[in-house]
Picture 1 (cartoon, helix red, strand yellow):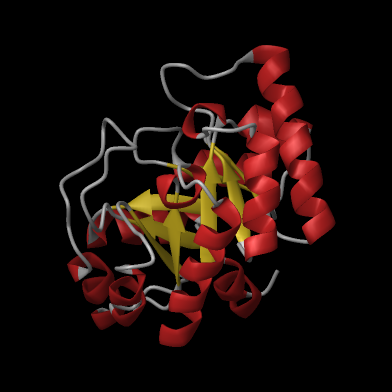
Picture 2 (cartoon, helix red, strand yellow; picture 1 turned 120 degrees about the vertical axis):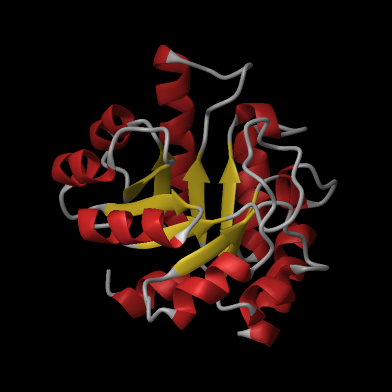
Amino acid sequence: MSVNELRDALKVYFIMGSSNCQNKPSEVLSEAIVGGITCFQFREKSKDTLSGKEKYALAEELQFLCRQAKIPFIVNDDIDLALAINADGVHIGQEDEPALMVKEKIKDKILGVSVHNFEEATMAMKAGADYFGVGPIFPTKTKADAKEVQGVKIIQELRAKGMMIPIVGIGGITSKNAAIVIEGGADGVSVISAISQDENPQKAAATLKEKVMLTS
């Protein structure tokens, strides 16, 4: 995947695990795909998460939907799972396995890294990151261990210092504030509850995409 193709794929980046949904995960993802999401991350990482064969089975089920829709399927943190099912990529945080080691394992698959400042961004880039997840942009309740809210200042700083790597904003993003993130220099927005907790995931995804595309 070229850099420009990755930028396009990050426009509306949906992140979800079984604990984030009100309805069956496959139904939520199917609706979100119809609504126009451009990338999906399987994040089975909270206190009530699946593990073992159940986690593997759900990953395969959701990956199948993404392959049918021709959108990238990214796995959060679980490198072994990503390799076992041949996912399109992996996303890691600063507390996960070092980016350089992950890149050596996944080779030409997409590597996304969460960064919170210029120093972390520089190290991730040297390690072979393909895109950055930057945030939390706005207050969020989805991640209990979320860092301090930053707004778009870090994205602006990375761009001002010449970093042209694809960037997706995360944290408290909705259709009402998505434009701020794109205007701040991000290529796209990533959301969890804005789609997964909505009564109509399809409409939520479509509205979010509309806001992003109008601002891009």
